[in-house]
Length: 106
Image 1 (tube, rainbow, N blue to C red):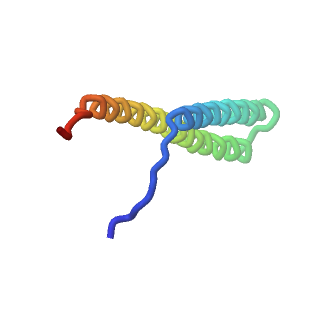
Image 2: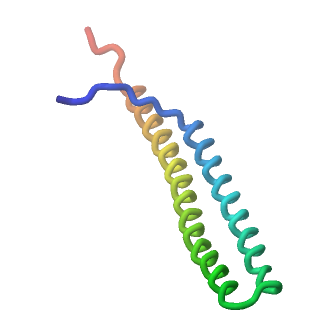
Image 3: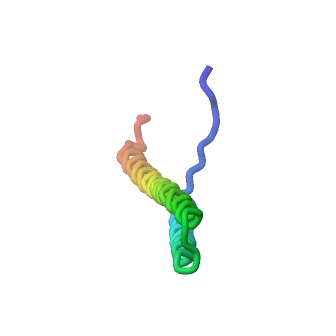
């Protein structure tokens, strides 16, 4: 049994959501950078094995945050590509519809 339904696509909404994703990704990257600067700045006042372990944990977190940033950027790009594909398909469909004869009944 085939599923029935209506798919509503708004390319402008896809593009604006993609922009929001991109903005959030940039915010995430900036905050992570600030956090790492603070943590590495502690090394001037805190030294020893505990300091090294603490900074090491945060550096591991930095790798995870970099992966998260990349994933969010990929989602943003995917949304933009979907919007472009939809616009292109709609234009192609409109061209095909325009090429159909209107006076086929004689």
